[in-house]
Length: 237
Image (tube, rainbow, N blue to C red; front, side):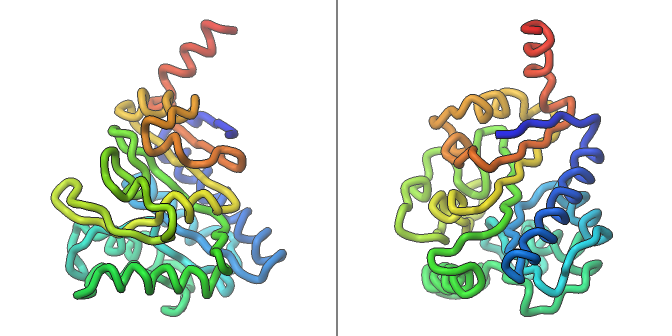
């Protein structure tokens, strides 16, 4: 895993946007498309707004969701609501290039299966997405792969449902789908992430983030999130 520390959350967001744009150009040149699953979060919305201003081959971009809360359309809890405000209203993407998780469906299990089928249509079977942007929760979760949930053990589906977490069920990409991604981009900001960031970097598989493959991962963190590790590095140097 490559690890970079930047000054603040805004710097992290802009560096992440530039990284995504670079990967998009390379993927489009190689395969004619760029499949981008994204997570939610305040810094991530800044990142996606910045991405809209980058040099991206938008005609070949497919935007997916890493996860989504089961809530009505337009609900402020919905990640899609913020995704639309930050990226989709500013980038020249056609409706068929945006693949929202169908959490409004009456049959959520069938909806998750349809979501997985779209992944296969766009990114092959089994699907290999190009770049997955991930965050890290203070409890060690990423996507909606939360500690103690049965979804952590799903090995035969690319999209699955969780139990109730923070008041909502979720639909999420599973570890098999995430671990086939060509590149993982971790975007981490804030002092509440210090301990989990340390555990992520050492590959602690007792937290969900530690089970994400590290070979092709880039981790961008601000100074607040990386405070403990940078202090340790200075002491060791």
